[in-house]
Length: 121
Image: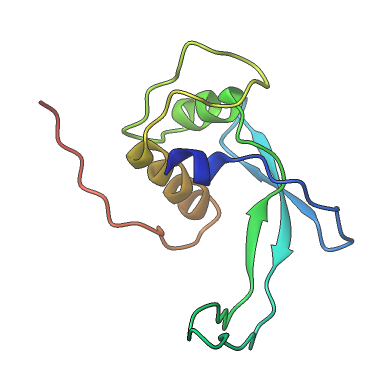
């Protein structure tokens, strides 16, 4: 599932592509997004496939640097991995990926996407 959240997707960058900046002083990072969707897209004959809204997806993998800077900016419940720089963040689990998505939302003034409860063993 984590692979699905951070998988590399080859997209043609459209004029609607936009880089958003996240993080705090000294720990800013950008994520390049592209608009996806066809609002009103009808379901197929199996009743699946309807997309009644547009959404944005990252064009590139989320880098370890973005995870490190988000953690330094106050993102909770995510541990920076052993990799650095622009290498893809490959050691986070699904809950950490969801926490990163929540950080992106709340850092830009939006509502968290996931209602997460973390516990430790």
